[in-house]
Amino acid sequence: MADIDRGNRPLSPHLQVYKWPLNMAMSILHRITGVAIGAMVALLALWFLALASGPEAYSWANALAMSWLGILILLGGLVSIWFHFANGLRHLVWDTGSGLGQKRVRRSAIAGIVTVLVLTALTLWVAVSV
Image (cartoon, rainbow, N blue to C red):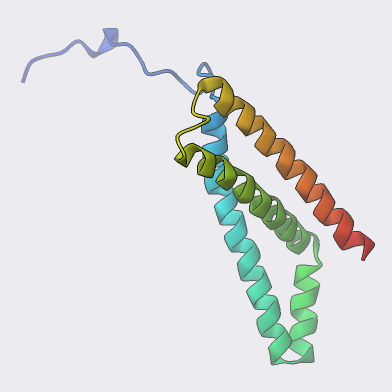
């Protein structure tokens, strides 16, 4: 095998100097929020299972769901559901072959983030006011 001078080879861009495009961040966030939806569904399934098991199990599961960790999981799941909804609409538009330019992709990402914030706030407002 040839002896190659490995000291003079260029390095790949490092995360500290590489600017992430918004669309890449949205893609990574989509995957992360999928895990949050899974955690929320697991917590809700545990809560329903405890509800069917009796009052002692229900009080334990309800205390878990209403703890700071449970509320954080439920809130993360709520944001995740709206994010998947908004991002899914972007993908539906892209599947038609439109909205694929760089400016349109960035605008749709920003519109998706604003949509997530508005729908999450609206959902929380409805949940608290009932």
